[in-house]
Length: 378
Image (cartoon, rainbow, N blue to C red; front, side):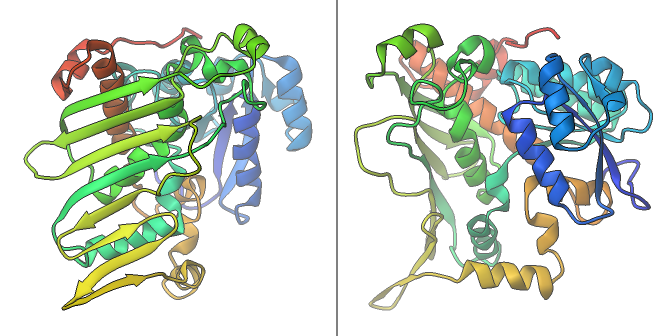
């Protein structure tokens, strides 16, 4: 349950960070129905960046800050949206929680499991809500798959695959974004932290977030790139990550493959299978057998979304991670456990890195005890 439900007025939000991701968030807030949210202040260490965002989103200069701590001092802010690089998530989030603000934070949850666990612990201690930006949980195909799982249509679920593909889509070195996305000191990881978090968390959600027991993994950075971009980017993260997860007290397993760059035309999408049926997420498909007939089904997910919204009256509350977070703060729906899913995703991702380093399978307990903070002081 969220304490201090805000039911009689818009949720007042402050945004920390005014870069590319923050502008996506600000655009989403501007598109939510009237009466749900009001962005009242923004902060960024770059005066030019905060001024530019303020102009674009009509936030007066008096409500623009170059020190996020000044934003947190305001008593007219209910919640904070953290849009910083991965290794900055923990210090900003914890400061906001301790200032009495609810927090919505960009993915991945942090740069290390240790930092992510500390963030969730601080949220629990302060009684504030913490939500992590996991957009795939709100995709039509995820909601449809979840309905099939909950209805028992898959039977006993025993295996899932988390899959993400780009043929050549590494940040900066392939032409978009900034070098910070490919530097461990800022982002802590590569494809697994940038894209994998979405797909791993999506599958964990459909599996009811089981507790990992043992994980093996391997990472690569092999695909060639522009020599100049390699040199000036300081590229030192993985472009391909793979893993295999065994969970506690269950026969269920998960395998993972996530690519920023690879010489192949496509991957099959993520899927989940059980004794009675299976679901592929993208493209969406539902598979089952009746007697001698193997049945492969598609679904009109757009009409399903229309009914979720206009018949059941819940679709708008799950239209996007930010729409859901605001609705939860207003007491309209329970908050999905995005922080818990994101924390488990951090554990698995860091386990893949540790397994790659040690060249063997590792236990979840090893990751928990060995994980070190990568947080950068603000």
